[in-house]
Image 1 (cartoon, rainbow, N blue to C red):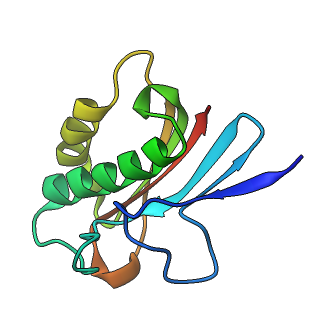
Image 2: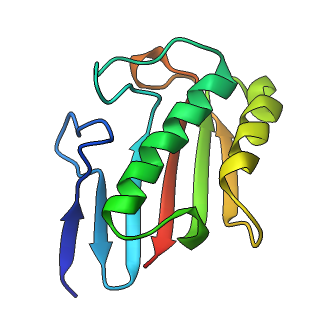
Length: 126
């Protein structure tokens, strides 16, 4: 099955040997997004809620570049530097996703790139 790179100029560019997303057949795999301002290329300032909002804005830009949206997401993985920020992340997350919600895992990690508080990767059907 062929795989196709998906890019959005409205999301941060990949800074290594990876794609923002890859489509293979009807499956779309989004790389982890962190709260980078796509214009400045720097992490946004703010708490876990503000950072989650930026992460999901970035993810939305990549989804749209593939002709998809949050309604098409079937699996999300959330990485939090501090699990006590779960409620703040979850509140913002609920603004972007509607029932039926995707399956989701949330994992506390010891660190994330650029010292951010949250990273999220997604799998969608398109």
